[in-house]
Every structure is written in structure tokens, then in C-alpha cells.
Length: 388
Image (cartoon, rainbow, N blue to C red; front, side, top):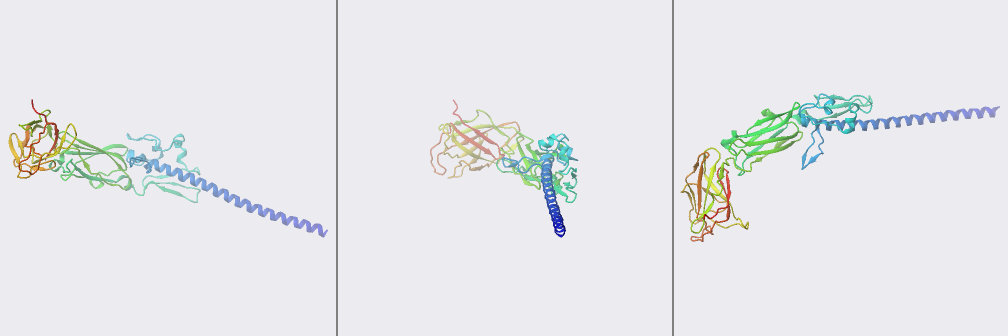
């Protein structure tokens, strides 16, 4: 009897121990499963939130030719959407979505809730989205550190011509147009550079710039109406300096009259040519020969000239012993005035093969390509021929 009771008592204790151990194992397993489930849902939710933010403001890692190309909804419409629907349904004339990934497009409601099945909280004014998580830990992810970073950026710089000169008195005739998205549509900021060429599009002059790739067109509203087109990539917190240079002069109104260039004189060492003024009345201060090249071989020609004439009148004479050559600026003693839509004739006289030698052999200018830049920035380029 005592042995039986002892045996039964030992079995009951063992059973209690086994139950206790099993309880502990279940508790540990439950916590492990709960932690694993939480981590899985946490990872899925944070990944989804990150993708939604990229839909709002683009992916900074997408770059082409060194320029960011992805700016999401904000880059196209210049604002944040009222709700998540704007990421998948057209809004505004410049909407180029959908902005979410394909898997979200196929499930147009699933991406609006977190991995726990709760709707995301979206605060448009303060720029964040939030998940309630498991009810104990809230997940918050910022769309931007500051709204200013997205919408109040700056572009500034200078506009000059091929010579590096500012527009001076022509500033009001140089137009600038920056096209940006604003409130769902494209709008134009019109501007002019100052006389010194400086310009800016900034919040301070009521032209704040949102993030995105924006088209800037600078145009001369006179003469040949040359233009510059530049795409500017504006990232958050931008203060971009964009220096723009025309490929011609601001006063590039003089056009070479075709077939007017001749090499004349007994040694054909004089050049004559005519120009047409396509712009306003023009006064010239100086000129510079920028190139002398044998047109058949491409070899530079060594030659220096002694005089410049306008309408047969000498407007520059060399001072012995220095003749003028390539890249030498000659300042006119009499300033030619060329009326609008008129033609003027010029001669460059007595090309010699040495800059300073008192007597120097003449250089024939037949078949020598010459480029001349006048003080207004106009560039004349031609090959003089020997008249029959």
C-alpha cells in the first residue's frame, strides 16, 4: 500500500512538471511567433510606406546623365495629392501617373492599408504618413522634412553672350520663361535678366520653384531672336546657379552678304566684303579677326593687316611697327553707324607675313577663310574670292 501510494504520488508530480514545461514552451513559442509576425508586418509596412513616399516625391536614385529624373506626383503637379487616389487616378492636366508600382495598380485599395489591415493616416499639411502598427507601436514616415524643401526652391544665375558680355541696355529685350507645375497645372514664370545679366526665380520675387525637371527658355526678342533651352533638375532644398551663354552676341545683327567677299589688289592682299544689318541702328566700336585658315588645307595662315576701311573711309590704321593679327582688337577711330536694314561695305587692307618688320612680303588672301567679330558680337565668316 505504501509502495503503491508512493508510485502514484511520483507520477502526479511528473505530470505536473511536464505540464509546466509544456506551458513554458507554448509561451515561448507564442512570443516567438508573435515577434516574427510583428517583424514581418513591420517590414512589409515600412517597405510599402517607402514606396508610397517615392510615389509622392520620386526616387532620388533614378539618375540619367548625372541628373535626377524621378520626382513623382509633386514633380508633375507641383503639390501633394489630397489623398492616395491621386497616385493612381488622373488629376490635373500634367498628371503623368500612375505613380505607384504595378502591384499597387492591380490592387487599388490594398496599398492604402498597412500589414495589420488598418488604413494609413496621411497628413498632407505636415507631410507624413503613419501606420497604427500593432496598436502599441506607431510607425511614422516623413514625406519631407519641410514643405519649403519641396516647393520653395531657387534658381539664379547670369545671362551673357558669346563674348561673355551682359545685355546692358538690351536687358528688357531678353525674355526668360520658366515652366513649372503648380496646383496641378503647368504655369509660366516670365522674367528678364538685369542689365548685368543677373536673374533669379525665388520665393522672394514671388517665383518659388518646386522640385522637378523644369524647362527654361531664354530668348532674344529682337534681331535673329536666338534662344537657349535648358532643362533644370530641381531637388529638395535647391539653390541652383545656372549661368547661361548665347552662342552669338546680344547685338549679333550683322549678316554677311553672300558672295560679297573678294581678295583684291595687285597682290590680292586686301579683303573686301559687305554686311547687312538685320536689327536696329547699330554703332560699332571695334573688331577682331578671330581666324585665318587656308580653306583647302585647314592650315592656319600667318598674316597681319595694316588698315580697316568702312565705305572707303579709313577707320583704323596701324601704328608702326605693330600690324594687327588674329585675336588683336582694333578700336575704330571713327565709329561706323549702320542703319537698320541697310548694307555697309568694309575693307581690311595690306595683309603682310610679319607683324613688325618694316618691309614685309604681302600675303594673298584668296581662298583664306576669315572670321571677324565686331563689337556688337556679330560674327562674319567667309572665304574671299578673286574677282574675274
